Length: 403
Image (cartoon, rainbow, N blue to C red; front, side, top):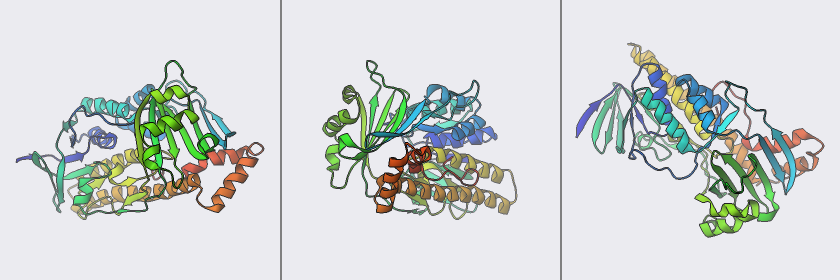
C-alpha cells in the first residue's frame, strides 16, 4: 500500500466536502478530496434542492461567481401557498431579484449543485482521488492517518464530510445523539411535463382532503418537482412508497400526467441527531454536514448548515496551520468544531419543533392549527404562522441558525 502525504485532507466529494476544499483553497491551502465513489457517479434523487441566500453568499465569498452560478441555473418560486383541509390560508408573492444581486434562494437538483461546485474546485486546483473508500481514521497529537482501499494517507488535519454513515466518525467512536421519529414520509421526484407545465409555486397542504387528510408538499426545482406525502399511522409504507402506490395517490394531488414522469421514489423516517462532538480528542479532524448531523428536511437545514460547517472548519484549520504554537492551533480547531456543534444542537431543536408542528401529534398543536386556520382569512399573521411554523424559529447567534 502506497503512502501519501498532504497538509489537509477532505473526506467526501459531496457539496459539503467540495465547499470545504474551496474554503481552504481561498486561503492558499490545496486540500485533497478523497471520495469512495467513482468519478461521474450517478446520484439518485433530487436530495438537497434548496439553497438559502445566506448560503449562496457564503459560496460566492469562497469562490467568486459560484453563488451567482447556482442562482442562475436554479429557480426562485415567485409564489408559495399553504392550504388547510383544501382551503387557501396563506399566500406570499416574492419580489423578483434585483439585477446583480443574489436571490432569496435557489431551487435546483443536488446533482446540478455538485456539478457547479466541481467546476469551481477544478478551477481552484483542488485534487480529487476517486474510488477510494475510507476504512479507518486515526489521530495523534501530531497528525492523522486515513486508510483507504488503495493508500495510507498522512496529513496534519482533515475535514470529514463523508455522509450519514461516516466511516471517519465511526472510526473516531463519535456517537450520534437524538431521536428518530416514527412518522413515515414518501418523497417523489417528477420531471416537468412540457405539455402541461405548472405554475412555479411551493405549496403545502395540511390534511389534504383528497388523500384522507395526509399532509402533502410540492416543491418546484429546476426541471421538475418534489412531492412529499406524510403517511398516517397504520398506512402500508411499502405500498405507498412503491411505484404502483405512487401512481395511485399522485393523481389525486397533482396532474395525472405527472404520474408518467416519476424519476425517483424514497420512503423514510427522520433522524434528528447531532454528533456528540464535531472533533476528535486531538482536534485533528472536524466533522461537517451529514457526518455531523441529520435533520428533517423542513426548513432546509441540511446542506444550508453543512456549508457553514465546512467553511468554519476550514477557517479553524487554516489558523492552526499558520501558527507554531500547538496550544493556539488546537484551540482554533476546537473553537470551530464547538461553534458548529452548538449550531447543530440549535438546528436540531428547531427541526424538532418543525416536526411536532407538521405531525400534529399533540392535542395542543392540533387545536392551535385549527384555530389559526379558521382565523387566518381575518388575521393574516396566523396564516403566516401556519406556513412558517413548520420551519421552527430562525433567530440565533451568527452562523448558528440553519444558515
